[in-house]
Image (cartoon, rainbow, N blue to C red):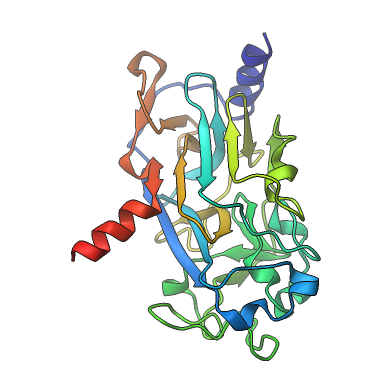
Length: 280
């Protein structure tokens, strides 16, 4: 009964499925946002311990222009999982399970910028997340971090040049459904290395959210995870089409009769990416 009630609430919020226009999901982009150094751990009294070589990943849902991200969800038949071989890093002083209420000023101090959280587009107070490769370095850049932090630039666009943040007047807030355990994973002190949803979601109420670059690439940031271990996930997402309908994409075993689609990018394992790079 609880499962049925949850699904009814979720899909009523985002309109019933009346049919499809073109498929709106172009893919899922996992951006290697930053790799920590020994110097980044210098202020661990305030930031918490972060092992050298920890990787901060940002997960973007890449949509066609005109489409909107509505929810990432899990059901008994399509569970959603985000997992690491080690615990996720969470900033002990400024961190939160969602970035909207993390003050922008804290991102200039030590490594608050590397906190782990889930989102529907935001990456901080008044800020939308944007891929570093298309970030305008002359606009909204935090610029100067505390001395010694975020200096790593090996094989990455340096954060002191492009911070992946774009100021916006309206920043969508996430709503969490039946995800009470999230604080144990992405709270100030992580007690787990796995987010698992089989009867819940995080969602953007209303029409849904678009990316900071909505008229071109339209990539919506839905999560940032920092870990010293491998990262893997299986995602299910609900997206809104321009004609007012919604489209369901699941990681595995789509049911055609239930209007479910799938996409290979909804399943990710960072270890597989490493192995492919080594072969090259």
